[in-house]
Picture 1 (spheres, rainbow, N blue to C red):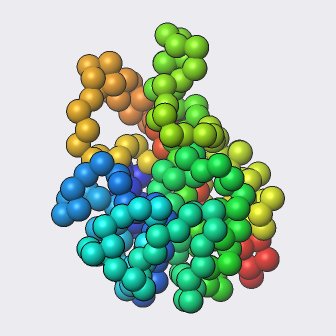
Picture 2 (picture 1 turned 30 degrees about the horizontal axis):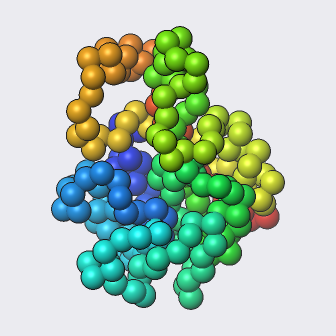
Length: 210
């Protein structure tokens, strides 16, 4: 399935009864009252929402629901029905440690939902023509394809429940003319194939879950 944006992904996958952990919830480049902020969408859709990040305003997001911690090593006294990591895994030094922490904090029957830029998206393919490497965020450490995500999950005791795509962030960033032009092309291509869509979205469950 191709979701229009991450808010649509959240609306489809989060139930009103879910306790949700949002990993890396802070610092996504928009104001905190913006309805486009995925964390606001989680608070609207879920029963209870927690969050972790390395740094945030703990006056606005106090404990015990919010914790300053590394995504690669965290624990809560409760278990979560859904763990979200939206455009986070590509920034980590050790994605395997991150998935192991997610496993420890996942409730029985819970889901881990990860989004990350698609290494084969049209924008990366186009920038490879004009640059030696695709243009990426200076803080990113990894490229991922859907196959690489599946293999990483398998190495950490997880199996894919769903493999989807997301068009874009819809945060209102100003886009260049080239980006707007490529948007039109890749949305047209997505009618025929999802392999060039901008963002991957994979849902994991425990490999031994019944």
